[in-house]
Amino acid sequence: MSERRCGTHFLNTQSKAALRRALRAARRSIKPSQARQAALAATDALTSTRRWRQARTVALFLSGDGEIHTDELIARAQAAGKRVYLPVIRPPRGRAGRRAALAGGTLVFRRFTPTTPLRRGLLGIDEPVATPAAGRRAQAICSLAHLDLMVMPLVGFDHAGNRLGMGAGFYDRTLGQRRGFRGPYRVGLAHECQRVEALPHDPWDWQLDACVTDQHIYTW
Image 1 (cartoon, one colour):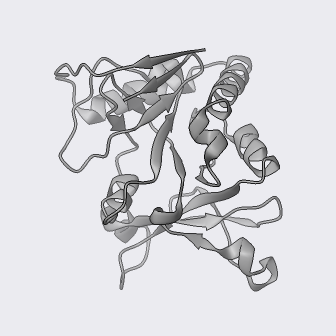
Image 2 (cartoon, rainbow, N blue to C red):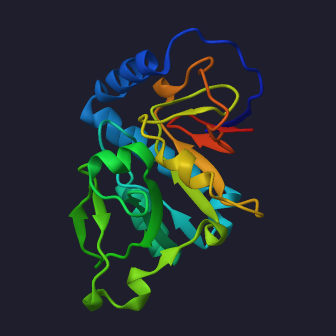
């Protein structure tokens, strides 16, 4: 596994929507045996980094749609005594439902332990449940200011650290609420086939600090 520093940005004329379709198809086409090998390689790479070793609070995600599997990564984080948090989608204040969430929803990060129950969220993704029986510690929400490391899902990334997500903008809106502090350190997790020369990006898009794939570690 090698580490590469990337910094050159080239104009890409493809639209985000077209790139999103192509890259999602590419990652879904990976055979199950290859996907398992890729997940293990990416997990080994990420857990070997200084940022991972030093992190006490880590935001992770539950994988789907051909994303790098995160089960082993979550298990290793918990075994190492790190506090693991998963994203929970929240619609804008005073509004409810899927449409409101897609239009302006943000994320909160709720503690996840091996005994934390999950339920299907607004967009069909499992989210940790806050229940009285789970105990106060298991229900805790971690603010952005107290997250050491945020491991982010993505559809694509480029040589400049630009990230292409699923299009709803949850991570970008959530990070846009950050005020007066540097963290969290943002790491993308992807198959190598999700890397492109350059991505179209908007002023509100947040760049990655690093991206880990099954073949390389990229930093910016």
